[in-house]
Length: 93
Image 1 (cartoon, rainbow, N blue to C red):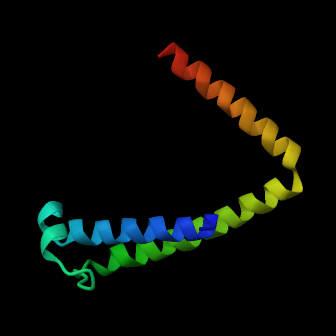
Image 2: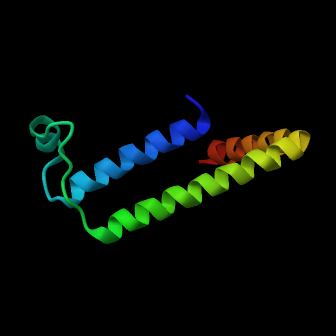
């Protein structure tokens, strides 16, 4: 699965989880009792926000892909420095 495909799959999973929690049902009970095709109703604002989030995430990931392709050495260097920084911060905790 491509990176974009994984992103869409994760967003779909989050969307269905939010739909289940918004419906007011217990997650375990919902997982056992609902058929895979049944989709609980959710508030329209949540659905709109999820679509907007999905669009923005796709735009950001496309921008990141282009930036890494344009500057591969700088990207590797930045990732390396970020790793060192996170390592040092977690070492102090």
